[in-house]
Length: 147
Image (cartoon, rainbow, N blue to C red; front, side, top):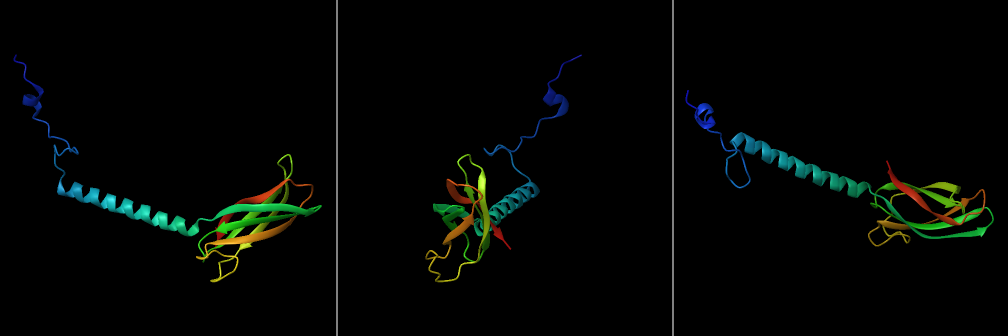
């Protein structure tokens, strides 16, 4: 019995698709690849636009304790001018326990508001909180958009 090579026995292998151009994609496969790429780009762009509209960030400016049982926290909020948001403001004790907490509503920015930046995306706020014991630090815990 004579031994034959695999190519003679089963036929030659078709070259697979490679980026180097060694093979060719069928028109149908090329269409699916282009459609998948276009869909991925559209989804990425849509997600970027969506996140840009709903992101809210805050920055602590200062805090003070004008009298026993009271704290004042100054902070700025950056968001889309037409979006409404809420921020949780907290006061912490020396052992990092929360001794004061308040959720503050941040309405959409009015054009030309004196507390807003030129484009209306950043606004400054001052909040007075009651505390249950002495605090040593105050600031924004988190902010989120509301419908």
